[in-house]
Image (cartoon, rainbow, N blue to C red):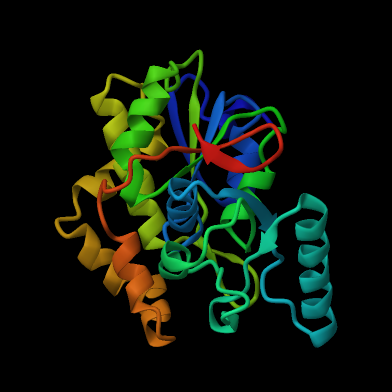
Length: 264
């Protein structure tokens, strides 16, 4: 590919999904994942409690019982090898397995030192980064803290560009579904970074920023969007409310040398 796909010359760049992350990370100095419902929100809550989070990429929507069993077995093996507990699907939470991708569950579950967190979207974006590349989990809850951390580390310039990647969701056929909440979360961070003097913005980043600035009620939009309505319809409206909170978290989850998100 030519340099047209890397948004060269800008200090703040924006793309969608693991494919977009793969394009931007060849030049970027730092990758920021935005997966508001719910991977990065849940990571921020867990890391804020002192839990080290190991992301595990879970292929989207296994079609057969055999594929689901294989994915579960791989996650179980990874957790055992990592000396970690394994988060389960939201509806599979029990007293013995109280950890899941739900931020509400993670906020009240017992403390564990290490947790494997399966994810079909945010973890896939993390996997697109080079092993030595700083990877940050950002959400609406920690926008200002992440922006401050990035600029304090001199990220967000053409010499040290940041790749802000909205994880998005998936349609039933596995295709990427751009998600409103991730666009707004990315736009919030881009707006914060520019306010701190970072930049310039790529055209893509500028449009994400404009979408955020043009939305009067961020929490209302997250709640009314497709992802928010989907979670609410399955009994997890509380997760949406938590994810829509603004700048209430003072932790910056950064992937460490062992692949776990820990305080930056």
